[in-house]
Length: 293
Image 1 (cartoon, helix red, strand yellow):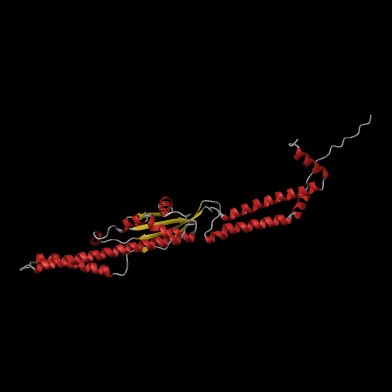
Image 2: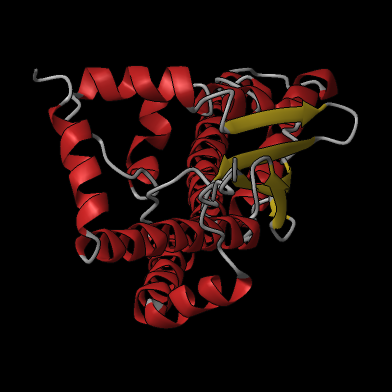
């Protein structure tokens, strides 16, 4: 009895040539997908941040730092100034109202917050966190640091609040001088009137008047000074990267989009093949209607 060999159908094999053919046929899809991915990634990662628009968290923060040499208040003025400079600076940078208007310029969106909610936001999220103040008693310096995701905003905000702090200190310093001068002047006049009423003026009686007049002269010298003993170093900017760099993120996004485009290209190629093969179409129809029976 003759036996006929049984021909087992071999599964279709995909050659490298077939893959290359698919890439060539779908080249427009692949090139368009890669180009669109590159364009949108550059737009979001590099262009939007120039206008303070962030559609993602880059993980990069910039810290602006300024070291301020605070004025030294003489003993003559301490009784006429409510707080010495380091105390006043500490109070100012713990007050949400002090930085409220300056912070609005670097804030992305207040989301319609009320004044109370905005003050609470500054107290909980900015003061002591984004904005940090340290005082060195030995050096008589204050170090201000402000951290933000935009380098220019960080530097501008720190400059604004430092200038504002200097203006307030200068106002109190000048007012303290004026109050001290007025007090010494009144004391001098009062002492002079008392001496004038005496018949015999002793040297010991003149001494207090001379001391008061010297105090008055010293106050006038201080008042006539044009410089305010407050100096600031140039701002220093530090970069702190906690997340993925933009260049790496760009490469990952483009590769992911290209991979998806290749997958879609093979799906479209298979769909074209199925349309031209009645048997394959029949298999798909049966599979589609299988659960409906």
